[in-house]
Length: 200
Image (cartoon, rainbow, N blue to C red; front, side, top):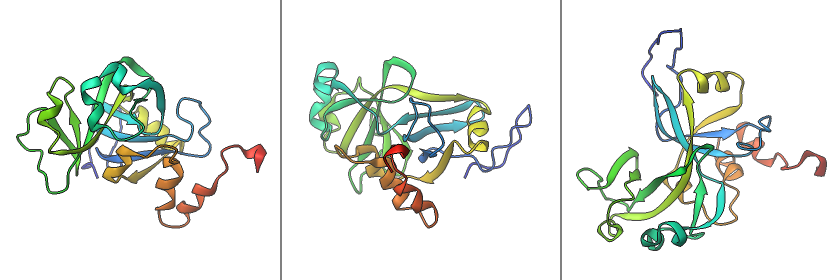
């Protein structure tokens, strides 16, 4: 976890999420933008937090926006909606092939484990041998200093560890339920929570 630190204003983030963790929306979070979302945390520090929603696919095909990167993206080959902030910008996450070290590879910046940020101005062919796959996100999810902690204090999010393959979630896969199912009991029970309560 992030080392204990006391910031101006009294915000202590010794139990805060770190880069590479997942924020899983709680069952009580009904706000449409984040309902049943899974957010991958890219940065978390004294300035705030930044991440992307992993499980919100857009209707935009990747080849319509970044055709050169289509071959490195698993199905569905679409742009994903990373969050409500700066939808006119793009963030790309990649998963390294097993045994590959991103150190010194142009166009890659390690986030956590096998997950890296990918510079979309890099030649995709130069990265084809080191990347297992990529996802491109329009926009991101961001929090100013202390804002995310306030949402955690309200139990809006569950903080859990990620796996590299979460970034490359499969089509029609319910990533929200999948991530919860692999948690220890009783947390795993939340995965059975119905999408619509009135259908239960």
